[in-house]
Structures are given as structure tokens and as C-alpha cells.
Picture 1: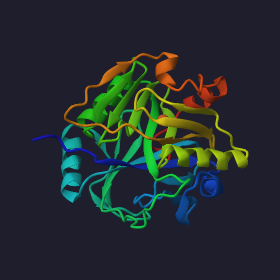
Picture 2: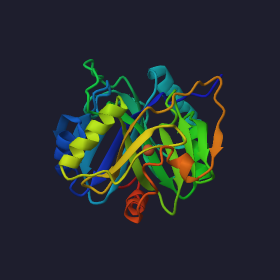
Picture 3: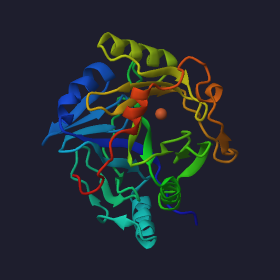
Length: 300
Ligand SMILES: [Fe+2]
């Protein structure tokens, strides 16, 4: 019997001192819709079915509050909980109804970089899921900086059931939990932090329209537009009001589980920026992507 697996990335909860005050950026400029608010937090959806893809929480420090993953159903949820517990993972709760907008059943656990992961099923989903011509559908991936890439990779493979899609030399590894080329990527770094969160646009045209909307609001592209090698996705990176890096992306490679062979991509310009339009990220952009050390669990 194969190990239990998470089935998709739902999204991320972020902490920052004035996080909830940045809701206006996300609704007016970024193209999300607010679905709930209260207790110093706001919850935002894309055009896809996920109840919320991003939540912003007022907190003393900046970082990931938790990452939300879905499992198929309650049987899978309980199997994953039992598997993680048996493997010695730090599991913070038993499967139970979640006290959060959208509800659902879930439990929290901790990864080796002390990030809180929330695994859930039966969260309320939206049925009005038509694409908009200039707005994101969902969060399609998170890139996480880590000082222990091999340990993190082993945990996400062995405990959560991720598979390797590709490597960018020994610097980055791209891992998937469904047909999207990557839902998580680890970037070798000095400390654990969020490198960026990527929001999926329905097309290149939608991506360009979104870029135009941000430009008109004095939030220009800070790196891009370009097309990556690993994942083949079109990218444009911005810095949002809390200092986190956010990406519009589209045309993410879809993986055939039966035939895909991971490759090691060389970190050369024509493979990292296939159109040759983006050039390398600026020192300021690299610093924003490095972020500040994430305190992890304990920092509610
Ligand atoms: Fe990305």
C-alpha cells in the first residue's frame, strides 16, 4: 500500500505587524476577493473553488503562520495523521473540526524548519469558479528557503507523499503533490523563510493584464516577465506591502505521473529565463526573496 499523500496546496497564512491593513492591496491591486475578517485577520479567495487561498494575520513578527494542504477525504486525513505520528513527526493535534472560516476537518503538524502545516479536508468550497480575464485562480506554489534542503525534502516525500519533479542544480528542488509541476520548492539558504508565493493566472493575457493593473497602482514588476526553465511557467514577481515576494504565474507544466523523469537543470541564463526577457534578479529582489528568519511554530 502506498503512503498517504496530500492532494493539493490550498494556500498560506502569513503573519506581519500590519498584515490585515494590506487587505486593500490584495483586493484592489492583486485581484483577490475578501471572504472573511475578524480578530486581526483577513481571508481572501481567488476565482477558483478554494474557500480562501491567503490569510493575513496581525502579529509581532513576519513569517509563515501556517501552510494549508488538502487531503482527499477524512479517510486519507486519518491515514496521514497515523502515518506522520508513526514516523515520529511532530503532530500538534488530532483530526478535529477546524475553527477557521470555511471550517473543515484537520490537524496541525510541524516540519523540520518548524513551519506549522495544516492538513485538512471537507473545507467549504466555492461553486462560482469562472476565470476572470485579469485575476488569479489560486496559489499554485510556495518557494521556501531552507538551511536543510535534504532534510526538508525527505520529510515532504516520506511524510506528505510529495514527488520530485526537477532540480535546479543543487540549489533548488521542485516537488509536486498532483499534476502541477510543483506546489512546493525548496531553495537552499542560510535560514528558513518564505521565498515567494505564486498565484496562478488563467493565461498569459491575464498575467499581462494583472501586471498592467499593478503598474498603474505604482507596484511595478520587480523581476520578469519571463519564462522559467523548470516548470516552464511564465513569471512576474512583485513585493507586497508586508515585504513578502508574490508572483503571478501561468502555463505551469502539467506532469504525467507515469512517464515523468526528473532532470537537473543547469543554472544558466537561457534555461532560467527562457525568453531572455527578465535577466537576473536585482540585489534588492534577491534580498526580498531571502526574507528574514522565520520564527516558525511558537509564533502564533
Ligand atoms: Fe515561483
